[in-house]
Amino acid sequence: MTGYPDEPSDDASGDSHERGPINEDRRRLVSWLWRLPVLAALGGAGYGLVEVYRVHFAKLVPTDQPTFAPRPEHDVAPLARFEAPWDAVTFDLAGLPAVAVRLPEPIAGGTSDAATHLAAFSRVCTHQACIVDLTTDPEAIAFAFNHRTDRPQLTCACHYSVFDPLRAGRAVSGPAIRPLPRVRLRVVREGAEPHVVADGVEVEAHGVRG
Ligand code: FES
Image (cartoon, rainbow, N blue to C red; front, side, top):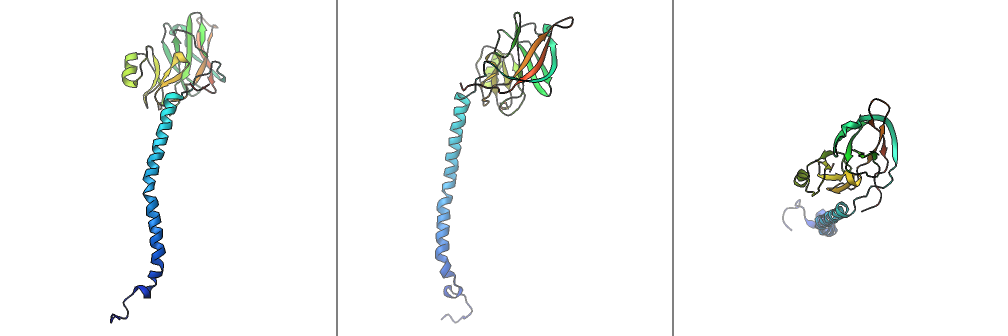
């Protein structure tokens, strides 16, 4: 007896009947909650390892026989505009930013006119769709893109992917896995001077894993 008949007591409120199971539930919840950050950390580490593997060991190799989806023919430039190796012209093929490059040697999916070897690539980075540019200075590529090379490369400034035109647009550094799709070129000789035209885009820009 307390002398205060209205004072709530454990027995009177009925809480004592529920406190046991509730505390047990709370204990179980807390024992799971501490595991969440551990599981999240393990998941993050696992994802990171898979990405490292993909980025360094699973880049896709361009196929030797690309398949092109036709596009309306686009006049890129007079052939004379590609006077020396690594001369390049950017253009837009039915909404696709692209670049045509004169290469020192032929590649699969390119075109040649006597000793003039040309190839063209989509400029849409296969990582997250930023626009790539032809960077001609190997020292700049080493410094800015952390990739050692002896020749110009197509580079993406967003996350530093590098694509090698002489390897048919293969991703050689950075987070991109897939090569740049090639653009089909032809040299036409209908007017006073030969012109380079583009009329197709590679459908599936990868072959085997390298
Ligand atoms: S968008 Fe080009 S590297 Fe990410």
